Amino acid sequence: MKTLLVAATGFEIKNILKYFELAHENQLETPDFDVLITGVGMTATAFALGRKLHQSRYKQVLNLGIAGSFNPDFPPGTVVQVSTDTFAELGAEDQEQFLPIEQLGFGESSYTAIPPQDVISPQLPTGTAITVNKVHGHQPSINAIKARLAPDLESMEGAAVFYCCNQLHIPSIQVRAVSNFVEPRKRENWQINLAIENLNDWAIRFLTNA
Ligand SMILES: O=C(O)c1cccc(C(=O)CC[C@H]2O[C@@H](n3cnc4c(=O)[nH]cnc43)[C@H](O)[C@@H]2O)c1
Image (cartoon, rainbow, N blue to C red; front, side):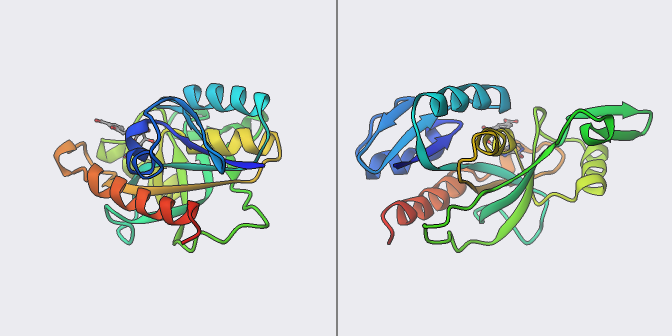
């Protein structure tokens, strides 16, 4: 069985596509791995990945992408393996308090990686992440999420990938490169090219066992 690479956009894995001489398409097949581009966000990701895993069997899913960092030890360019990812907005407000769905009795909001048994460990720093529909860019909400969940990273897809793979008991790992600190919105500070360069370099080494 093969590995499935999952990314929100083709741009985030552009150097992988170039290295393996693959076209920029949403679904690709190679002898060793397949590629799925889902679109940005947890809904697009859950739909595309759920459909793909219904059609084909994979030995593992590798979710690749860029992310925002809450952790000064993970500045832009850092490549991090995500251990646990939480749907941060899944719950209810009760005045100033936030009630996660666990407290409402409707299930789980956090999902973990299921590292495959037979592959080389990615050998990366590990961190926790949250998955959001709305990127944090306002200091009071950044302070609130740090106080509530103390995440290292945030993305818009990670927990959806872990959720799909947990539901189907498929090993899954998530590797993200930091493109920006989570801070009051300052798009000019984002280092997307550096993040993509480092993420793709790591992934090419991983895929070629170098
Ligand atoms: O211009 C913007 O405000 C903007 C907001 C979110 C993402 C983007 C992108 O161009 C990249 C899409 C991709 O990036 C991930 N990402 C990167 N940094 C963050 C973040 O600080 N918070 C949440 N997600 C982030 C995300 O997974 C998207 O798929 C532009």
